[in-house]
Length: 267
Image: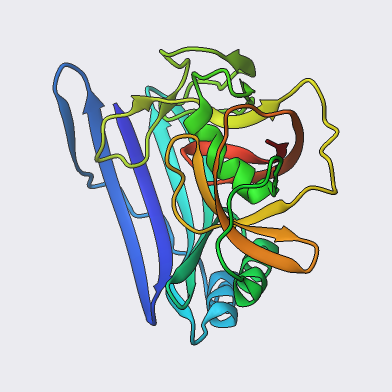
């Protein structure tokens, strides 16, 4: 038995959506989910930081902008825990190109870098022999590399997974994955690697090679369509990542897959 009480404020393309919900789910041979009569969790109070973030990003070239701020209480088989949520999704266009940025906090540095690079981008070029991926781009790639030999991946420790079980730090090799991801009480939880972290033989990421600073499309397996900055020049390119030569991990968490930590990767 899983129970959730949650409230969220969502700013999306000029609208404000406020939602409070309570639900229960039973995960057995048949998965059942339904609203619960429990009292609702409180909405984030007042004019939250999410609204200020939303207002600061609205602009003429913003194609889509979603900012979320929420709170939830969870219970699964007697284990209780709480969770706060911050999310930003933005797509910005220039001509036929668009950059995509997803965040799990309200630090907008990645957004500003992506927008500035898009404004200076020239023609598309073939992929350079070596590229370093900015931490936000590396984080987007990691979920697709689980179960491959492109890079060594570890699951980082956390107190609870989607079933309230502890998430142990361990190296990830092949499925079935040890923990459970539950995106909503309405969906059956699935085994997924959580809080991914990349480990390589070296953390010496060459600062002189072109740097992929932003995604131009969602990650497709090991293939990235990105904006690369090489000195004063910015260009679009497509990279098929076959091997990670060096990795420098960060403590910043991104909402890709069931979560991954930013990593500057030399590929």
